[in-house]
Structure formats: structure tokens, C-alpha cells
Length: 158
Image (cartoon, rainbow, N blue to C red; front, side, top):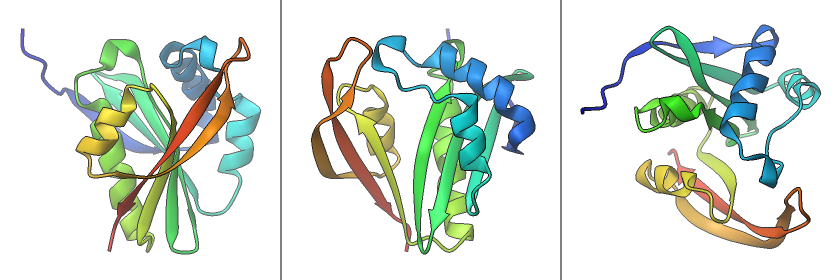
């Protein structure tokens, strides 16, 4: 069985999409890690200057999103999520590339992100050219109190 990319759309999102973004997060993020943001957190972030949301649709259904921001000449990928049913079909890679392109268009010279140790997304970020630049030991606390390291990655855009 071949996995083909059937994007119908990569589009700019906004506050009107937060209900769907919340559903995608609940579907995508394992609740043991407490990584999903609340709608209020997302709305608060979207209201800040330099923040943007990208929505990916696959076969006509919202399948994933990326939330990013620009501060001065550096961008940060804040959140990235894809529904499990859409994984391994190019959605996350397309979202990362869209954030990279938009970061460049907004004048960023570097794009940063942070990920919990053990997160499978590390393979995606490395494949897209990100390099590990730091680590924060015991930075994240899961729902059970277990601590996880944070790994920081960066991509040079200049």
C-alpha cells in the first residue's frame, strides 16, 4: 500500500479555527505528557504580534496545524500536531516547511523549537534540517509527575 499525499489545502488559520485546533491536539497528543494547550492559551498566543497559525487539510479534513511566532529576527515553532490517521502522509513535514518559508518571509534568520525527550517528532525535525542546540534536564512534568528533558533545536535560515 502506498502512502500518497492528498493535500487539499495549507492555509493560514486564526481564532476561528481554535475549536478544531483543540480537537486535533486532543487527538494527537498523548495525555500522559500534558503537551496540549488549552484554547485560552492558544487564543492568548494568537493575539500577540508576530504569531501565526497554519492549518493542513488532507482529503478535505483538517489534519494538522502549526503555531509559530517571530520575535525580532528569530522564529519559534511553538506547537505542531497531526491527527494519528494523517501521520506518515507528509502532513507534518509540509507544516514544518510552511513555517520555515513563512519565517524566512517575515525576516527570520533562525527558527527554534523545543521538544520533549522521547518524542518521535525529533526524526522529522532532523530530516527537515534542524540541529540539536541544547537540553534542559527535567524541564517537562507529565500528568503523573514524571520529569522529561527538553531538547532544543534550531535551523539556520540565512
